[in-house]
Length: 357
Image 1: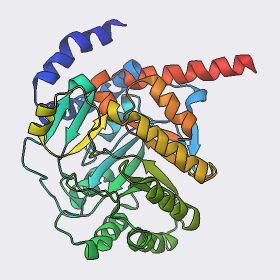
Image 2: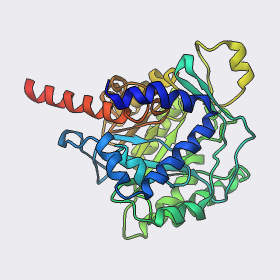
Image 3: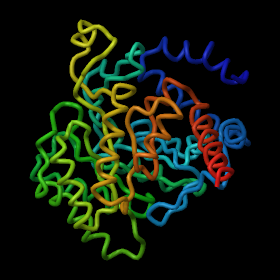
């Protein structure tokens, strides 16, 4: 472990973990924006944390990615620190979830660490500053960083009017994002395992497809799904992928299930509802990616996300059929060197395979 990593684990991480998770998150974003304004700040971050190697490069839905490791939606809700996050070594950054109108989310406290499980429970509720602020932020140059935009409906929007929310976001952010992720998961408060039929999903997606057909530039559309969906629903969604202009799947979101946790049942009960992310999700997320990959014949892009806490788990997700991966909870627990560790392992693996061949 290098000096930089020891400083993080022994000094910085304990300080951040002494704060509430939302306060720590706000501090990190503020520091990143400050570093971005200092001449040479992003260069310093790249020097410390980025890995460049031809073996890491990926071409997915017509875009060239420097490496397959992205930052999942939920970290940079409003696209405020895209260039700084990319300088930390990420191959792409997904902002959001963005909703048409600003919303403050659910009452606090609403995010909880489960250190015994390397996990987080959150019921933030799609907190963001709304379309206009995100549009303003993404207008700024972002140095060839691939930016995805995760879009969702406002909490107060009825299911009947939900397609209008998605279309408004898609139309107004179209020129600023490289791809879109349609988040059909509800905001941390319900069980969507059986709530999304093919008809309901296509009511959201079809207007986006129609709008895209009239544009000069092509923006891939991904669909983000829940790990709580039964296998038969996953198969139906994969069939939508095969039979429509949908470009790929982001699998998965957090889970409402609790399963076997090391955190005491009393502590879990006190926290209450919310999505669980982190290590307890790993096996299910990899299983879902493998199922979609096999059913689709491996011909459509999959972004694998959920419980990726080690470089080995990232490799397992890629081996299961993911073209790209995203991390979030693993980044919180492992710190800023995590992307570098993953990329170094992927390079070593590629070099070992090249030697064997």
